Picture 1 (spheres, helix red, strand yellow):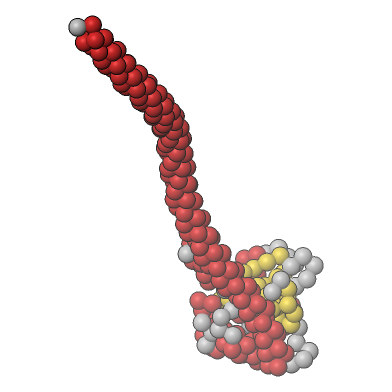
Picture 2: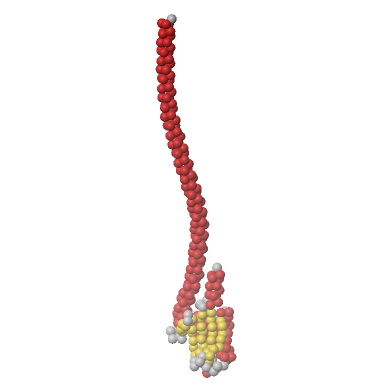
Length: 260
């Protein structure tokens, strides 16, 4: 009985030691597992923290990128608006320049027309002067004043003592030659002027009209081209035949060019 109890005690002790050993092993394993889990938890926590920090940085960068994109979009919109405005302004300026160039070209043509007309008149004056010298002779009293060619002769060559209105027969050849010069230059306006020293303008006008009448009736000069006037000659008496440019036609031409 005593031996049996002893064996039982020993077995019980062995069992308890075994159980303690097992429990110690399990506890150690549990501690080890707990530490391992804690390490893993810390690692996961760090990963989560890093992920959260990276996410925050990513969100910040995303916000920054979005802000930059917005700024770029605004800048691009402003640039496109400016480009459109510049294009419109450039087109307007180009149109204005073209209009200005067209106006300048038109004005240049107008000035050229006027210049050509003046040059033509100067050339015509030379032609008339040459023609008068050829027809009336080198000793003829012919000159140019202010662009007008003037053929003159003493008043008493046409009228006895320079008075009266009856034209002498001796002067008809001179008048006929003047008519030839007039008819050879159909673009000129002709002024017949009688200049006296008496101040009797009515007699002077009648004398100029008498010469004009012979030119028209006897020698075929177009009456619409002739103007007869009486003038105060101061200290000189003479009869003048003045060849002038058609200033009215020139003025109408210039006025028409300016309107255009």
